[in-house]
Length: 93
Image (cartoon, rainbow, N blue to C red; front, side, top):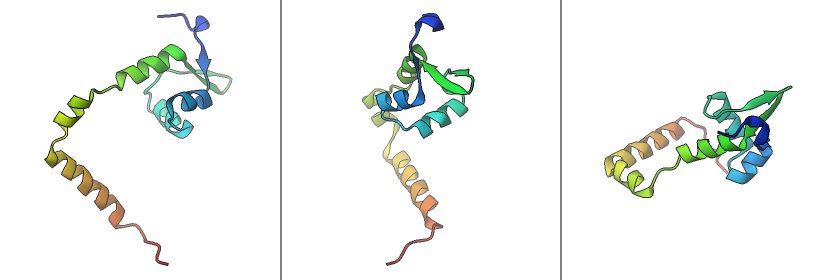
């Protein structure tokens, strides 16, 4: 592991730009303890090596996804999504 003093420290805007994931989502990941950060005088910085490790730990080969999500599981996911939206008010024009 490279010492922190030799690593590039990234702000949330840079991390969001590199990954295509919003800063808000990155804040949620940080709050959940999903990634190692540095907090210096209220500024959040993510060491480049920490970002690479986090992203590498999230890689799932496409074949595994297809095999693990059978038709029954996909149906359950869709049913949950529909159930979440049932109680919401609808805008009628």
